[in-house]
Every structure is written in structure tokens, then in C-alpha cells.
Length: 176
Image 1 (cartoon, rainbow, N blue to C red):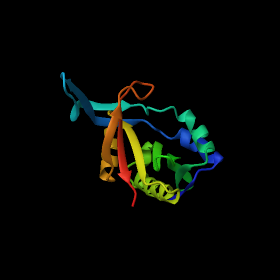
Image 2 (spheres, rainbow, N blue to C red):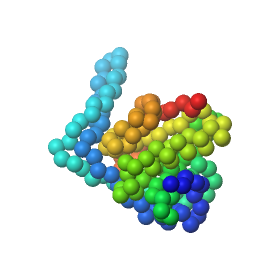
Image 3 (tube, helix red, strand yellow):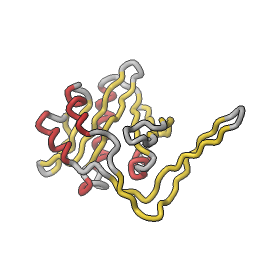
Image 4 (cartoon, helix red, strand yellow):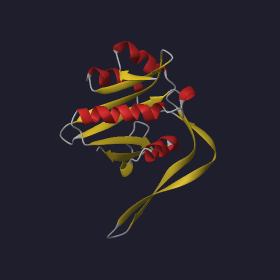
């Protein structure tokens, strides 16, 4: 597998990847408010049946992100783009923000996402960034498990974040 910076010719292959996911769990948000306190909890809920969900971002935005010339990496296997990670650097906060991460459905659970993340963290270090932030919807249980497996820590949420009005969960990892 080859991980490298994406070229313009790679973008069509990135757009063609199957970005959707299937899940049998979700993170359910519960808000409890009183006069002096607001508490928010997320419970992992098993769904009665598997659910297919759409990728929450407009992947047409990839061209604009690639033009910024930042941490847009692709994973190539057997001469084909099998996944990509799109990270934007924020020097002011010394943070890399993973805007998009996708591995084609037929090649998931083979280490491609982990390799992309490893190279993206290295890119972030080279840019002088001190942390990496990732996000996922409460419906994307596979991504939530993946980020936690890689050592990312829950750092917050934003209600109605995506165009679909789904909740975004944010996870951060400090770079060493």
C-alpha cells in the first residue's frame, strides 16, 4: 500500500469511493436541564436491525480542500485509490482537523484507515501542529469505535452540525 499526497487526477477516484456506512449501534444523546445544571450524556444503543447511513458531508467540497494544498493524502493499493484523508491545518490552534476520512467499503477493516491516520499525524507533526481533531455523526458507530481504538478522546459535540442536522461528535488526540 502506498500513502501519498493526492494529485488532481486522484480526486475523481476519491469521489467515486463508497462513503456510506452500515451500523447496528448509535450514540444516543440525552440532555437533562435544571435551574443550576445542564448535563449531557451519550449512551450506546443497539439498533433493532442494521441501518445504512449516508456520509454526512458534501464530497464535492474535496476539490476546494485539495486546492488548499494541505494534508490531503490517498491510499493506493494495486494501482487504485482505496481511501483518503483530508486534513486541514489550523496553525493558530496548533491543530489538524480531519475534515474527511473514507475507505472504500470493499476495502474496510484492512488497515487502510489506520495507515492514512498514521501518515496524517506525521504530516501534522511536520507542520508544527500539536493535536489532531476528528469528527463523526452519532450514527457512525464504526468511525466512533475506530477513533477510540486509535486513542482519540471525546472532546465535545455540536448539535445540528451537518446539513442533515445530525449531531457531530468530536475527538482529539495530542501528538507527541
